Length: 416
Ligand SMILES: *[C@@H]1O[C@H](CO)[C@@H](O)[C@H](O)[C@H]1NC(C)=O
Ligand SMILES: *[C@@H]1O[C@H](CO)[C@@H](O)[C@H](O)[C@H]1NC(C)=O
Ligand SMILES: *[C@@H]1O[C@H](CO)[C@@H](O)[C@H](O)[C@H]1NC(C)=O
Ligand SMILES: *[C@@H]1O[C@H](CO)[C@@H](O)[C@H](O)[C@H]1NC(C)=O
Ligand SMILES: *[C@@H]1O[C@H](CO)[C@@H](O)[C@H](O)[C@H]1NC(C)=O
Image (cartoon, rainbow, N blue to C red):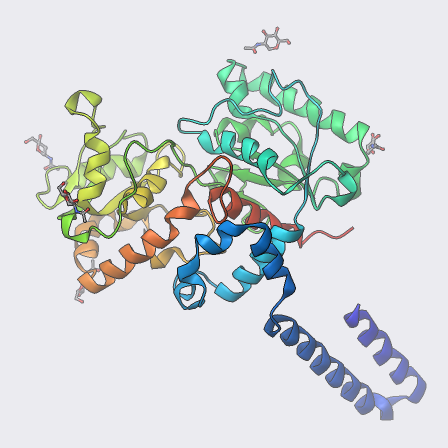
């Protein structure tokens, strides 16, 4: 509003008094700009009542984050700790999402398949949004509209890819015909959530679903048309975790690097080929089978400083969240991957992000990281563990709230 007033005022001044008043107009503009900056900075420096509201209603915000109250702690890991804190509080107070009620919950809609396994993030999101304060039953109150299709569930029922595409298309076209909301923005204030990579293929029947809606997906490689400023990278987390969280256990981390898994991508094949016999890097050329011993794979994370996370058949994998959980610095080995919450937290403060071609220098790169740097990475890693964990009901600052925050950031780009 302030902007349009400024522009109008300027035009009026110039047309009434010709060139001479240009200086006056510029002066007005300058004053107004100054005023608006003052207004903005006032808005940010005054203790906002919204924050206290959010804290009152949501005691975990305070309890779980006492150590961060000063903001100093936050500054290391978040791109903009102050904005995050204020904006998060505003989200907690205001953000509303409408879930389309259509579709038989027993088939592909509304309810998640399960809360365990590789694709658990999808199930947790579906369940969490219902349990959360963000749900509204009044579409007029909604900032965003959730299309509750579960592609993981379709997969569980053995639906073919072709049928999935048709099912999704029919469902969304049904919503478009029945409700006025989609047509207002051609879907730009709508989102869907899918962790299984089939979700991406299942939505191909409806180009607007990919082009316009916010896609919260677990496998945001660019070859599936992930658009970073519009879409949201959902963290892939295999829950429940087999063992408790690691952290503050640096003296036990005697192993420099670790990886074991399927060699189902070029980079994994190279990683295993180059390092499998190395005496300092613990790189296995296959998965550690259960027969090897109880939880041998997981226990390896506790003993290691750096856990290598190369892309598999998809760029993402639960290995990144595993590394974070067990306190092992994730080493992201990928040429393109939008890391979850990349726009909120600074991954370089708790992870090592490398290009695939760095695989040949991997050992030297890791050995070059000083002990002090490693300790700093490790301490930061412990601080962000909560962001990569799902809970039911959800807890403030957990994976669900971070995904909601990413959605909240994206809704600002939409205007009716
Ligand atoms: C695909 O849909 C057709 C028509 O509804 C159905 O006959 C067929 O069994 C479905 N196939 C799978 C694998 O879902
Ligand atoms: C939305 O637009 C489509 C295409 O123009 C139209 O078929 C549909 O009926 C509209 N939906 C509503 C609820 O008016
Ligand atoms: C280090 O490992 C030992 C043996 O597994 C364990 O008892 C101890 O609690 C660990 N130390 C830390 C700080 O986790
Ligand atoms: C690793 O050791 C095995 C067994 O000795 C050998 O077959 C393989 O070629 C070695 N790999 C490399 C990269 O040297
Ligand atoms: C490791 O550090 C040394 C000395 O600073 C430097 O010359 C070398 O290029 C580094 N190696 C890698 C792979 O980063």
